[in-house]
Length: 534
Image (cartoon, rainbow, N blue to C red; front, top):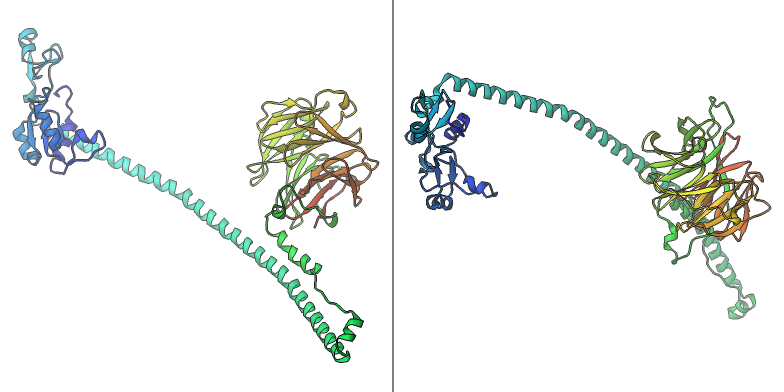
C-alpha cells in the first residue's frame, strides 16, 4: 500500500544516494550548483545553508523535519522513520494522511476517520509500508529495472556502432577524393610550369645569342671607326623593346589562373578580345544516333565541361573539352532547345513542345530537379540577378524567378514588334540592364530594356536567320548567322559589325572565359568546333 504522492522508487533512490555529495535541489532549478548543507525529510530535498535557514523561517515549511546531510545514510534514515506519512490531507490541511479505507478506496487523516469512516475497515499506512524495501516485490521490480536498463544500454551501443560504419566510410571516401583532387592539381601545376619554362629557356638562349652577336658587331665597328666623326656619319642608334614572343609565352599563365585580367584595367574599360581562330574539332557523334545532330544549345559548366542540347535526338550531352571526349548523355522525353546556367550546380533547359523549362542538377550525373510550366513554346533562355528570361512563341519574352513565379511578359504587343514574331535566342548584358533577342524570320537582332523599351535593331546583309548568341568580355556580341554560314561580331550598342571565319550552319555558341575559347554547335555535324580568342 502506497501513500498518495509518494513513490517506492523515489524513496529507494533517496536512501541509496544519501552517502554521495549532493547539491542544493532548489538552487539546481535555477542552474546553480551549491553544495548541500542539510536535508528536508518532508520535501525530500537537499538544501544549501541559505535554503536550510529559509526553510525554518517560512510558514509553509517551518514544521518540516530538517536534518544534517551527514546523517542521511541508510542507518540514520531508519530513525527518521521513512514510512511516516508526509502528505497533507486535501480536506484537513493541517493533518497528515495516515489511513486507507478499503470499502471507499479513499485515503484520509485522523479527522476523516472520525467524521466519515468510523465504521469502516481501515488500514494504517505506516504499518502497511513497513519493510517494503526488503519485500520480494520490491526486489523483483529493482531486478526488472536493472534488466531494462542493460537492454537499453546495449541497444544504444548497437545503434551507435551501426551509425559509425557509414561515417567511417564517408570519411574514407572524402579522404580519397581529396587525395585524388590534390594529385590532379599538382599534375596541372607541373604541366603548366613545364609549358612556361621550356619556351622561356629557349627564348632566353636565343636572346643571349642575339646579344652576343650585337656585342661582337659593336666591337668590330668600334675598332674600325675614328672617333666621334664616324659615329655622327653612321648615325647608329640601338634600342630595346618588348619581345612579342616572350609576351605570348607568358600568356600561358592565363590558361591556369581563373582571375580575370580585365579587373586590372581602369574602371569602365574592358580588354578587346582578339579574332577567332579555329584550334580543334571535338567528335561527339555516336553510332546510336538515328538522326543528324542539331546542337541548338550549348553552355559552359566549368573550365573543362560543356553541356550541349541535341534537338533532333532528344538528348543532353556533356563534353570534356580538355580530353576531347563525350563523358555523359541524358535522354529526354521531348526535344530540348537552349540552356541557361544557374547557381548551385544547376541548369535550365527549354522544352518547346512541352511548353516547360526543365531545371536539372549538374552535380555528378545530370538529374531533373523540377519543371516550370510557361505560356507558349519556349526557346531561348538566359539568367541574371536571380531571374530567368525566356523567349517564347507566339512572340513574348517572359521574366520570372528561378522557381517560375511572377511570370511577366516584357515583350508586349507594339507596332515596332510586329515584324519580330519568331524569337529563337536571348542573352543579357553584363550589367543585366538590357536583353538581346534574335528574330529568326526578320533576320535581325533586337536590344531592349528589361521593361520592354526597344533601344535598337541590328540588320545586316550577312545576318540571315540569326540563331545562338553570346556576350564576350569586352561587351561585344557574337551571333550565329545560320543561313549565311557565318558568325558576326557586333558591338554592344548594335552599331558596328565585323565578320568571323565561316562556319557551316552555326546554331549555338558559348564562351569559356577561363580558357578564352568559343564553342560553336552546328546542324548535321558530328563535331563541336573550338575557337581561340587569345
